[in-house]
Image (cartoon, rainbow, N blue to C red; front, side, top):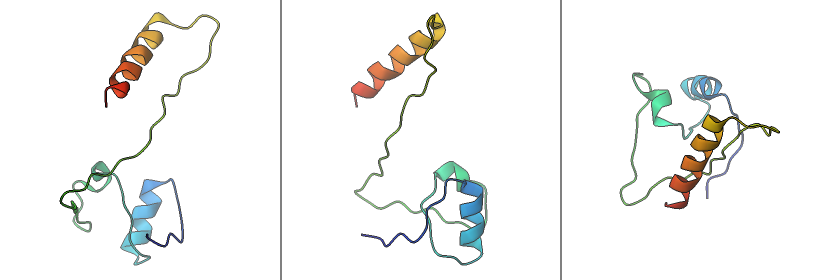
Length: 80
């Protein structure tokens, strides 16, 4: 298990820290796409997984489109 010394939510700040030599990080692939400094690595036979949440405002009269999209996403995520 890795020894995590620091956590941050700002991807750009993490990239700057890594560029400055302050360790390593796991970042979304899109965050390092097109850069010359970072390398991507796939660990054969392993998949990274993360938890996501569907965030939407509670309203007395929710919009039909919002409910439709939320229903679609909830159904799609249950299939995984």
